[in-house]
Image 1 (cartoon, rainbow, N blue to C red):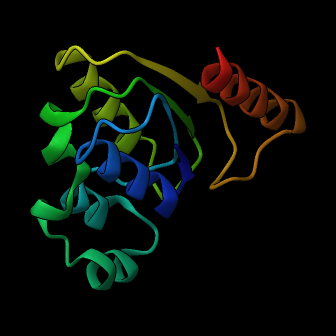
Image 2 (image 1 turned 45 degrees about the vertical axis):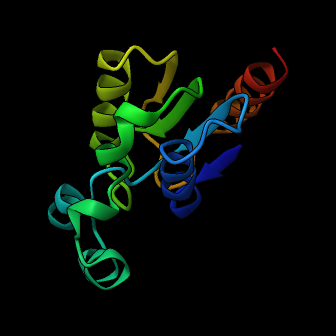
Image 3 (image 1 turned 135 degrees about the vertical axis):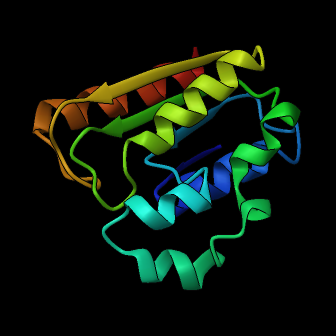
Length: 130
């Protein structure tokens, strides 16, 4: 299972609902719709996309997650602020879920230095097949 941005949101939501996936790579997710509303550069999308409804937040499902997770995110992401991954990483660790976090300096929402993109793809492949 892998997803980035809205796909990261859906991936985090899915692993909170089922244990059918062996591993997950989650990039730039939204895991807390309430804090996302106040920290993103696109608050109206968040408001109309999820209604900032806490029950739509993957963070509320973290106690049901058993799938090992690789999180990837860039510090400079204003679309899905890096704090979303910070929260998810901490929550997964506290829940005893295997989680690795690759947090890259700079970048934006899916835009990064070529060597960071190469590293992200290599990490993702290693995580999935390893």
